[in-house]
Length: 353
Image (cartoon, rainbow, N blue to C red; front, side):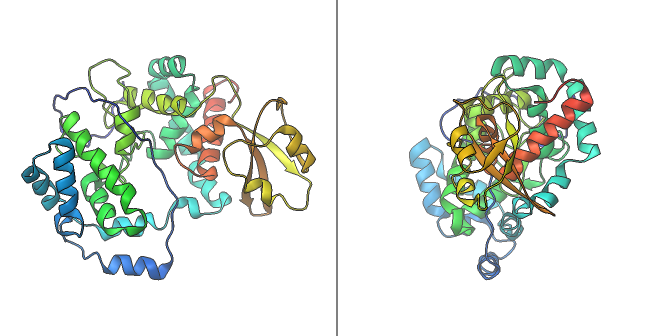
């Protein structure tokens, strides 16, 4: 087991239950004027407990889970409002064009890091791949894109980030309140101080950057040590990524995406059909889309359009591409993962996915 950066004190924990909801990633931007209004309403140094709606949240948590109100109030009184997280969430990398986004992740350093991660964790990767049907290189690529193989798991206290967004980001307040709820329940289940964990500006945690609801539902104890530790344990992170993809429809042994050319004048309607595969090969062909590679007549695909410096390139995303987009709802993200996985597999040795 390789060693990664630690964000939690070592302490015994109970095995968690695994109820509802899934992982989250986003690419929501805000108009400049609206962002400025949000930031103006969030003075730095304010405590989350003093934010509008926090008191009602405490009462609901106490009633629903039997969480002592005094304990919750103390946690939120120590949680700090961070205007920087609202600013960060409003300028996501997924807003970049593909040619800029790609070069963030398809680098020699990230490819070499993936090969090293594979060598250090080969047994766990083989175990997870056997259990869940996800190739090692895909698991590695997701971890590489998310945290550079566990080197950068985030510097924001999760309770600060989620508290700020739950009560200071109206655009997605309901979502982040649910995640704050899941986080507080998770820390009780896993016997972690809610003031200790650190993560991304949006509250994603650990080596694979799971949101709290996903941690509760999809994290697994791959190495059987009685804990699901996504901060320090690459074995559990590897298994949890594979479990998440399988739960979202990953098909063992199937392709991810195929290159395509578009001969029709306007492919926008096919692109607007969305990321979920819904287009038959016959429909694609009739609309002027020619796929390079084997696309069985029974398959469904989605037309993916990526902006290059010279125009657009096209791919047909299959079910496994769609499964990756459930990790982050962006075709740029899924394509970066797919292409990085292929490069890592090639550098490690053997054909790519």
